[in-house]
Image 1 (spheres, rainbow, N blue to C red):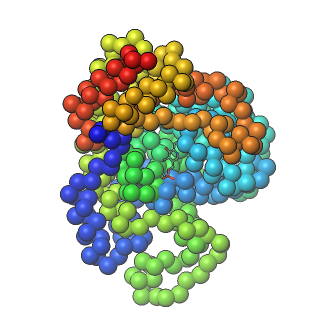
Image 2: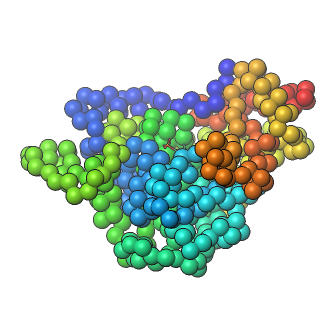
Image 3: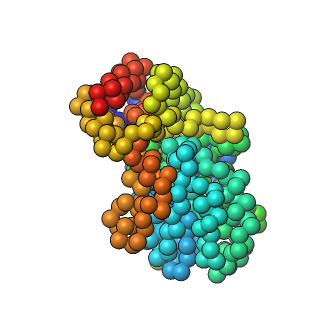
Length: 397
Ligand SMILES: *Cc1c(COP(=O)(O)O)cnc(C)c1O
């Protein structure tokens, strides 16, 4: 059996978790701070706030920007539901835009979707491939913008908030994911490149005169009930008293999660990313001989993928045949997936009136895509077997 994306749990991670369990501090504490600092250092931003999921991080940022009823947030139609669900949670409207051949949001589509109500562009670095940030920022800077609170006045333009659930370590113009948008949200869910079982983080990169470390402090308070003096601070200051100035959320990260994150981040650039890139390269090479293959984006003069998902497309296949191919691969005990079912196809969004036919590229991806296994311990022999099984499945339909 070749699984799809089991997490890499090495001895260092286990030791770090045990150390945390023995330390007496298992919720948000010293290791969470260390992880945040190391993450901020890694992706070259001033501050990063760890939270209990990417979903929570996205919602926290939307609420920080004052997003609510009457506001519009531009999202791609081809992503995981979390990207749009958080907009719904805030009472705002997700405005969906079709994607391009590289699976990322279409720039011309964003231009058409902009309205006087647009407050945020929320692109997704799908599969680990960075979006077109220069073009996205040009739109954000040059579009009309209605300011409805102090933070929006200070920014004076549309906010660029990236869903970087897939793109930790990706490069755009020699800059790392995290430093490419105003705020960038990572996911450390079990299947992601870096995992803390569940978890996420917000990399803060707002332009002057914003003070990112002050924003960090205020978001940190909001992420834990709005409590002024958290448990660790109370413990350190030997003071029991605290105040609550807002009805905050319960989104905090724990030191057990931080233990996994610290150990995982230590080997991320030296082991995790190089292995994922090598897996992509081996798939690319092995699949090159087949005329029916359309390979996922990997690297260009401007961009380098974080190699999260190997989004293979089969040329000129229809959805029924693609489904047969997948079944034949699964029957050979190789796990594959489809990323993603376009948002307009999901019952909730369909009922809201979104129509798949308005997103022809997303629909084509959905019908022709097969995601191949990529994980740290996937061996070269495993890769060759996946390609063999895939090729024979294609041949037999
Ligand atoms: C995994 C994922 C999320 C959600 O991450 P959580 O940490 O599980 O909340 C959001 N967007 C995309 C594109 C994802 O793949």
